[in-house]
Image 1: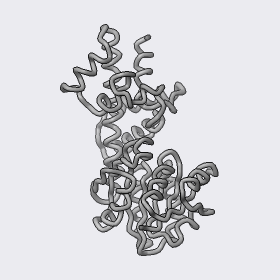
Image 2 (image 1 turned 120 degrees about the horizontal axis):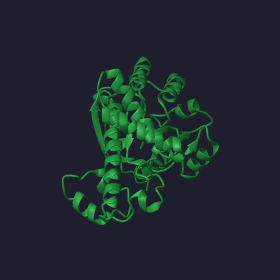
Image 3 (image 1 turned 30 degrees about the vertical axis):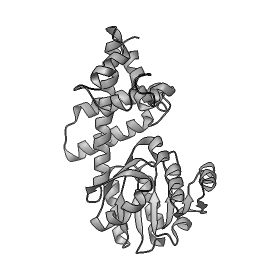
Image 4 (image 1 turned 60 degrees about the vertical axis):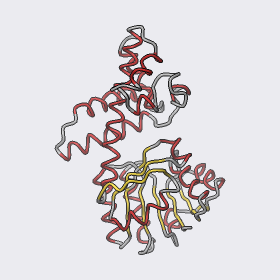
Length: 295
């Protein structure tokens, strides 16, 4: 078992750190928020007085933070205190350029590094069923995979440093677009007098089949475990979808790619967020679609 420092104990990081404790690792955790530190302590982690204190003596350092600026700030702070034979993993969802800069910082200090953003939401974090999309050298990925397997069920090496973040934003652009499309189809079905169940039974076994429909159906009933059956409680909040779609648009602009559907999806989710629904599960975008239809 490894000695692990975990920095960032929010809705995703807290359960992930708890699963490492359950797997038998020695986890020392830190977060700026006292309540999150207290929860991690209840889950069995030791609590450090700072991020630098957390990483001292750690074989593996994991960060789970809101944005690229936070990751770079923490990595700049802790890397001088990290042992050269250690491994540092960032599981935040951040921009590709910041991820690459973080890898360069680690290399400067002689530390192996992996960017490993996740898919699966808070449910996956709690159940240890996350998908990790990893970027970094083969040796770094090989070192990271065993510990990531304690928090997820699918670990994919996507390529060099930053490739994990690239895969994450591309995946979530597909997700954002598809959820809007599924929501529009259900609203149209309502207008045409077609029941939710009838549309689900057809589309879930036909060419309209997709994850947004079969696993995360945005209307109550057909998929009992979807947030639609729990008042659209996240899950994966709409404001986080705004973040990911914005990252995708920033990356597209930098790379010279044209993503008109991704841009329109960003605009739709931004409007939903601006209307005060940022804390609603992203599948709740169907409510915005209904509002546009005057329903």
